[in-house]
Image (tube, rainbow, N blue to C red; front, side):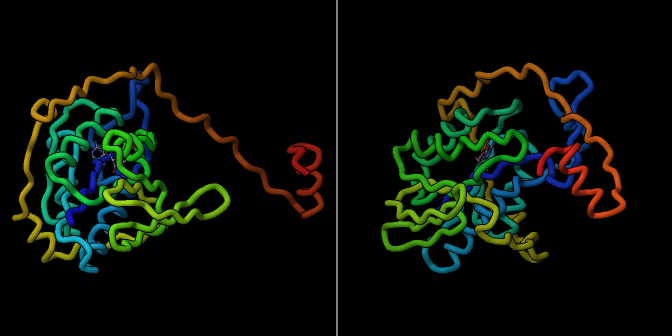
Length: 249
Ligand code: AMP
C-alpha cells in the first residue's frame, strides 16, 4: 500500500506574524518558512505505518511556489520515499488543493491519504474533508490515534469533550491532530540521502484543475493589543476585583 501525505509550506510557527502595512495580507518577505506542523505529524505517522510493514511507499505532495520543494525535502529527510511538486505562484484555496490532490490520488492510487487537520496560515480545516468528498472515500478527522486493522483503519478522533473511536473502510482520508505522535528529527545521513530522492513536477493545468481564487481578502487586521495586567496585594483583593470589576464570580 502507498500512503500520500500532502505537506504545505507555511510561515514557521515560531515566527511572530506581521500584517502588511496596506492590510492586504501578512508579511512573507524574509520570513522563515517551514512545513505545516500538522503535516509533520502526518509524515511521521505514515513512516510509522511503513516501518510496521503495513505500507511500502510514502509519497509527499506540495502545492505552492518553487520553494515548496524545500518542504518536500524536509519530509524526504524524515524518511519519505519521493515527492510531487505542483507549482502555484498564488495562494491556492482548499477546494482547488483538494481537486489537485484528487487528481494525484487518481494517478497514484494510494490506500491512505494522511493530511494535517489544518494549515496554520489559513486555518481553513477544509482540505481533508473536501478531498474525501471528491473521492467518495471514508474520512477520519482530528485523529489522535491511527491503527491499521486488515482492510479497515481504526481512528481515534479528538471531539469536544472526549474521544470518538471510528473504524473506516479503506481507502480513506485521515486528518491528523496534535497529540497523534511526536515527529522525528531528520538525521544528517538522512538529510544527505534525501537530496537524491526524486521530486516530480506537475502543473495544475496538466492535472486539469482551475486554481483561480473564489474568495477575495477584504482586509487583514492585527488582533487588538492586550491591556497591561496589574498586581494585587492579597487574595481578598483578588477575590474582590473578580467580584466587582471582572464580575466573573
Ligand atoms: P487547510 O484545509 O488549508 O487548513 O489544510 C489542511 C491540510 O491540507 C494541511 O495540513 C495539508 O496537509 C493539506 N494542504 C493544504 N494546503 C496544501 C498545499 N498548498 N500543499 C499541500 N498540502 C496542503
